[in-house]
Length: 135
Image (cartoon, rainbow, N blue to C red):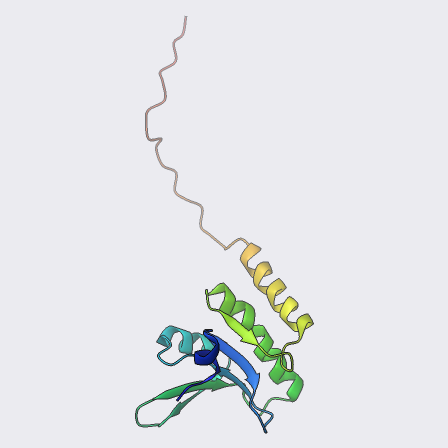
């Protein structure tokens, strides 16, 4: 069963499924499990067909969310997917530039914050310091 990710050679295609209001995120046939896991971590719901042995896997934005929230969630996944090295395409009817830019800003802000770290233990220099001569 071909899908848009297979057709366009991308890792993720985000779009509104025809004749519905459902936002889909399709991955190519045989996509790695870590991509599916990342999409789920980002808040998308996984679907498989047939249920007894997935031949076709896709993700959707949760339909219980309001329309604006659905688009916000879809747009916030894009920078995370790009950062993970995936090629993503999102159709104009889903893409909201302001939301995307805010998600990029949030990722940069988190990356710029220094992690709370314990000070490194004092270690001896790799070579001894030269002895001082006194006159």
